[in-house]
Length: 166
Length: 129
Image 1: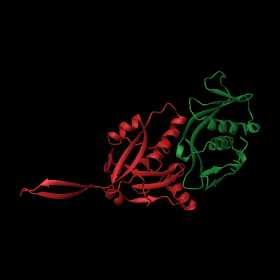
Image 2: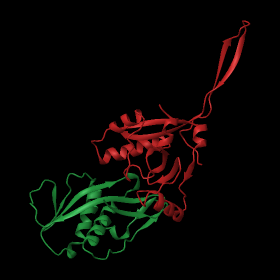
Image 3: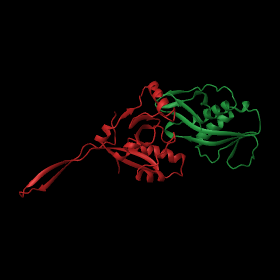
Image 4: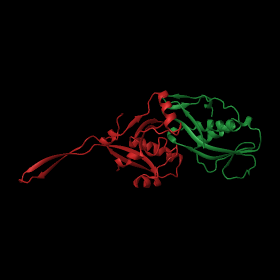
């Protein structure tokens, strides 16, 4: 898989604690490395996601890989997307939500990246995306796709509980 | 809803739509746009950006010689797209697809290619619009 700008490298915190014998014990506590993804949402969807996500949108224009969380890999991409939406629909009040997932959880997801080869991409999207095809079940928990505006990162609704909202 | 798509890479143009044509209508409808003498467009409060509207209007203008009954009002009942898989030129060809299908006519081919460097679909026939 590609790299993610939102990735926070492992951080180590060194702490000192008083041991039973009265001396100092050095503990190295390794915090869990996390990956961040950014989603642009209106007020109703912000509330929905904060409450667990249901009911998940199902329309092809909102959920073409199925029910779940659709995100950008960087805040800059999310901002560009938000700005474009607000330019076209000024009445929209949009918020960027940052979702974090541990690197371990992310690595265990069943992943797929839409091929960069045009013919292979077309063939796959014509079958599994409801924007372009029949939207057949694909069985993946994570899909990465180069959209017209950058990389789209989709997460199946069943793994939403592995995220923490910042 | 009907669907118009162009897909030549990992992203494309996808527009979902429902259009109706009315021969008996009142011309003082709110949101009605005059496209040509006796040819009108009703957006039904569907908000689209100016460039998309320009291409939609051009799409209607491109079929004027094929319209058999006047006056006529094309009513956009539903219109949905995701901005990640969209270019405004799609409105031009979306309307033509609907019109020719709706009148049992052959849909003319679309002259389009994907420019990888620009990351954009190019429509040579629309360069003057």
